[in-house]
Image 1 (cartoon, rainbow, N blue to C red):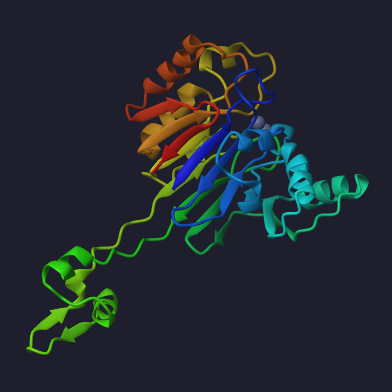
Image 2: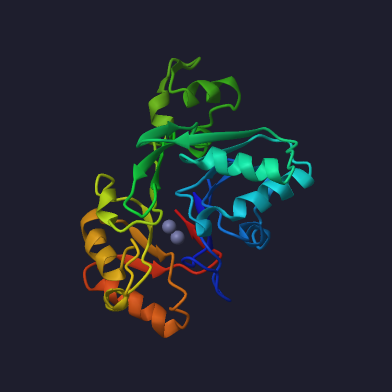
Length: 305
Ligand SMILES: [Zn+2]
Ligand SMILES: [Zn+2]
């Protein structure tokens, strides 16, 4: 799975950070999915090899502007360029009204099929190569985080082993691949099981939306990757007069020590943290409680798992 973090800023874009969006590509799939679509996400996509023609699903965590205002421009551009493959958009209640209203008022007629699916409660969406868990988060409006659970991958056929034994290529290989038992002309019995590598477990990835309670992801322990907001350091959060419902780096470290992701990525960074020193402060706070692999996201960061 290849993950590209397209935008990493909270609330407003900065010179170096655009607002929220994460692209996910599955191995051997030409199409890809987008999680959130803040303003200017289509410009961020242009800086990557990804194409909006191959974009198949958009999953929106919540309807705050920094997570969705980019979708209107993206849909319009995809339409103007005459893309004709269907696009599915998932998100909380209100998504349909929001999209349809903007499209109606601006006379936007799309040349492709747009399927809008509203998620009203925690549920599991089933796709060909993975399941997607929508997890209700704690924020000022209805918000879902998403957990991708890839299906187990079939074991690879060990073609080198078959060749080494001098077995002729052709239908025989097909039978072994299907783990069948094969009797050769000379009476040798081959067991297909021995020619197929054990299946590989699928990966689990948590993509959190805005949320002030990261422990809501505790049912998904030991994920391969957890991308979660850490908008402020706890020290700055204490000083805020109006408290928004976000996670601090300190709080995320405490939660991560329980959830134990193999890799933790902090994102949705407040515009106040611009310098490398500021980023270090966020990291320092997480590390007080979490001693695993952790990084602060930057725009166009790529992670392969
Ligand atoms: Zn936000
Ligand atoms: Zn929000």
